[in-house]
Image (tube, rainbow, N blue to C red; front, side):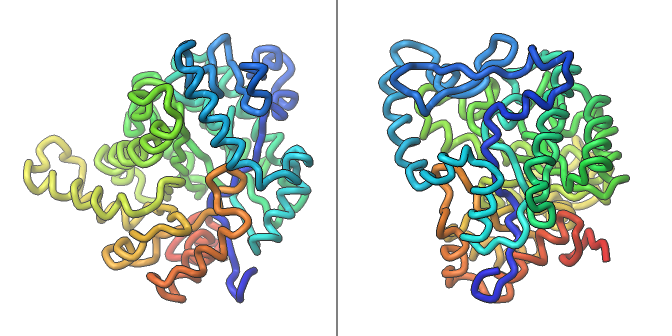
Length: 392
């Protein structure tokens, strides 16, 4: 709690590195992600590989020798952003430092998401990955995260990694992670994987399972997703990649979920789009509605309502703590579907003043702040309160 507000961080991160590999099923452990120091001059800016393919780090972002100067500049930016985490780095970003972060920001409950390898592997760069290996990686991570959160499971709530390369494996692992590990949501990325958009009928068993379990779906992007990711036109310039990846991929992912009919087919499914702000929806939902009005609904006969209506009935979005456009979002859509996230411990996070930054916003009311910080995330994650998802 801070300044009288109960706080639910809808999108807090951990630094998993490759600690979860030892939790993978033994028969797949040797095939799991591997750390690789990419350049001796960048000791803190490393990456990982999977099945011989660069998964994260400069080897992927700067694959050509002539891009090395850009890698040096990116490392400088990264080092400057991570300087505030000196004590956390000394702790290896373990549960102890995570608990300190919760106390520092006054966070009562946090939904926990990954940062590097696990956020990077379910992407187009890993198209064709052995589905059993994908499932083994997710199982290892979900079990490791459960142990991590056990330091205080009343405050740290795990979100399950989804082995999206095979929907049958997804159903098995998400069911296990929810029932055995008490995970509160399942996350995927908005990218096209193995040639499939999120509204592809192939994923129907996963969406049906989430409805049955009353567990929400989280769409969470990360930079360096691999072709055909929006960031790839800026390969070799990290900041330009990062500018493009999150909002543009989430726009396309939300179009797929909404206009592609996922919400029409699954009226009890709750979906959140995280880590890209909320202001883009002021334009994007208008455009989705406008396009159908202009061109007709002939190609989307499954839709019974406007895209904006589906979104506001079943979807949530997280805002940035200092986002000026949140005022216009609330004016247009109200305050029932808005979440807040610290994004700890990323270089661009507002830590250790993320909650203070949000509470200082003058463009939204005190009522809205309380809903964003507590009621809405409690409802979305199905822990009580909010406009839906109550488990009283």
